[in-house]
Image (cartoon, rainbow, N blue to C red; front, side, top):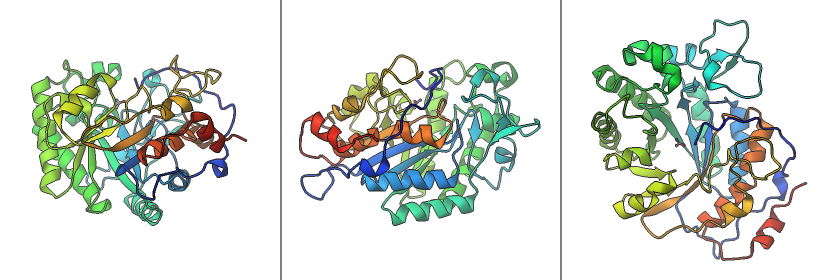
Length: 363
Ligand code: ACM
């Protein structure tokens, strides 16, 4: 899902000022989690861009920013105990293309021209405070044990023995049989707990770990230990639905795979819904948009989503950035679709799409 290869060109821009706040029947939102996700790993966005993203969310009365801080192509959070994560893992050879390109990726700084970046702990604390003043909680994700290529290039001792052959072919998985990897993850999580206030959940990832790289039982035990670790520190843990489907319990589950929706609703676990059928804002929003594969998730499609009954914390729009490299593209893809997330998450009165669309006019 996250690996659609295509070229995206910006063709128009939506006016920020034109997007109104959602029309809730009364001034109480229906769902606690009214979120947007931002992938800062595939492409890094400076703190000023994140602040603007927060401003736009706040204007829509969205209240959770899920920052996808780590993934294969870039590690974006300073971890003082493991400095190579950002010395090496936050940079890559500049391919001088608009799009990040997985097969050709080369991590590190030893190239004539590099791209990338990371947030220092101080910068993250400042972003957290900025967001709080605007009613937005930033929720960090470190994606473990898969999607870890950047961490493994920085610390190859955490990788499986066959990492060198498999790294770029999807084997970007920590060696879950090596106890050092759990110690690493706990150290990273401890530092995150020092940055993010005590009411902030920690998202541990847990998606797309292929069984050939870590057996389902091994993955389950490894993730369960981390979920329990976070909870023992008085916080909620979050994982993607993959981990819950594999038997990990006790966490809030973020459901991205429509095929898992019914099972997750039946499980009774608290859920944040962001099915890729409606809430993946890396997919183009109009047929005439360039690239992003064949899928189109229009504003109307997002607006048409009806939140099922169940133990639902809320919903979220996800902005993966494999093919989004500039702030202009980012804001074009995220808004106004985020306005439809707000409308649904607030539980606004039913109204015709045409009326909603009028409110989100383009310039
Ligand atoms: C995901 O898109 N792998 C969460």
